[in-house]
Image 1: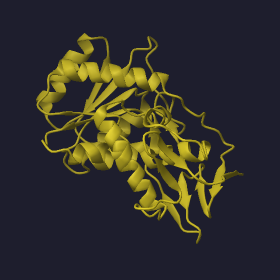
Image 2 (image 1 turned 90 degrees about the vertical axis):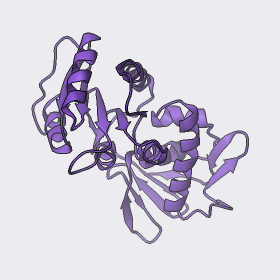
Image 3 (image 1 turned 180 degrees about the horizontal axis):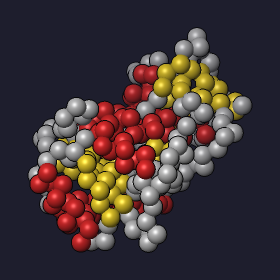
Length: 256
């Protein structure tokens, strides 16, 4: 089941604000960073909760409405990438990653597993504010399919996407749980079979960031999806590249 973090949690009470103020949760083990971001974001109209680790974040997500998670990659215990991967499969909430590393590896991995944006440490709080506003704006405008008890199964070329379990079932019947980004991307394709989808359309359909770097990360996600589908990268038969236009799922899809 997918949970919308902006609504009451189905297994517990919700402590919602009546004013509609956006609630940002900052996850960082550095107390100074937590204090700085609390002061700055509250000054600009946000409600802010700060926690030092993933366990504390889980308690907040269970009891309160959350509109955005700002998540440090380098955390004690469960690291930020693991938390991001878990959140992307459990809830519908945008995530901005904080990373202290100068290379692109964590950033690309974070986007691949479901983060909506990232910012490198050290950073100016004003930049984080701008990115938070942009992510929330995109999240509000992004198309979403309503969560329904009437889940579907999309069948194509022996494969099945089970939307109830958010699992991919191979022709031999083996199930594999998908990350949030993998699920959204595959759902976009099976919902639009034999139709060329541009990178911009894929960005909109998967509710992710609109930047040049993300355009490149779309290709990374496509490669990951092809790997899951055992689609030969040099001559793909399922998700085909239409050069200059985008990608297409070249298969007949049956919906149950």
